[in-house]
Length: 66
Image (cartoon, rainbow, N blue to C red; front, side, top):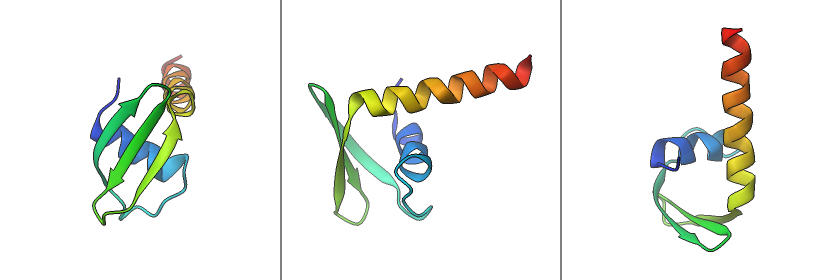
């Protein structure tokens, strides 16, 4: 699942951007996600990196339940 909220969390947690940075749009380009931030700058990240981060979040949540 890809949405702006998750991409913003990914930006803060995995890419270590400050919490004031928000993703306002994104575009998937084959194996890459092009992130656009509110202050006009952006970042290009491998799609695999995002999916790995998302999977680790899911595993953490499952472990908290068990």
